Length: 326
Image (cartoon, rainbow, N blue to C red; front, side, top):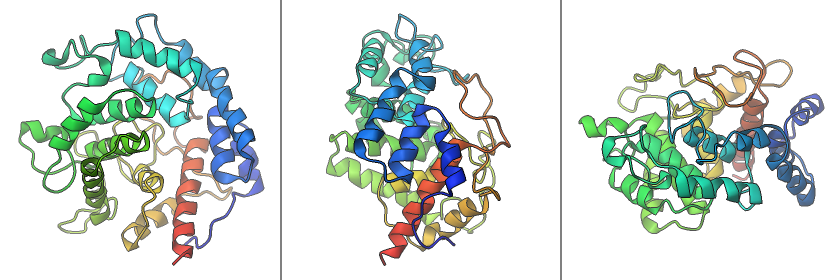
């Protein structure tokens, strides 16, 4: 078990830096002692170089990516905005402001959502809490008005503390997949400075849903939840991007960002993350979900992944730093 915060091995650090600005700036911010101005300068390059610039260039004049607000091919407006949030495009940058203005002014749910939502503006969302969570997370990150989605999500929280897209069909038990999408949205909304006691209470109840299940076990029996029943994803396999899928690393990344004080309920999940480190100190991309990636992210499933390595190291250091303070 890792017991103290540490920078990555020099060779791993250099490997992480031999990458796109989208990942370089996060490595400098989270895994080094680089000065703030160096980090900011690297982040600014996202809009003009590499995958960030490529994603921005793919936006059509009608404001959409992939010809839709949402699709199941992973190259839609919602998916690209999620990627731009994950890679850290500065919301205050001119490039982000231009792109988001086009989305806000021109994109609706016509042709890709429930009929009653067809005329909704993009940041008004649709009906599924999983999709609405992803839209609200990106919207809040980029400073858009997602109050309507947040209000809807607060009203859809289930008695066990989580959320489930199947609630509309009568399900009374929450889903890890839907819950993590909503939790990320509520956290981004609070980071925007728009949170309220109601959003905080809902978010804390939602994270307890994960913690009470030790991040990947059934609360009733303690049995490992090996597979997602709906999508077939394995929660012990780490992906990036995750889209709507939950996995243990994604859950721990949420806890880290929310500055949750880890307790014994995350120990097994932390051990799982540590167990996946290879002999070179890197983590693989366990799975890449099917679909059309708008840009290349990693070298493919089974290969060492800079994104998973960065995320795993952040989680391990978060846990180590928190436990060292006890």
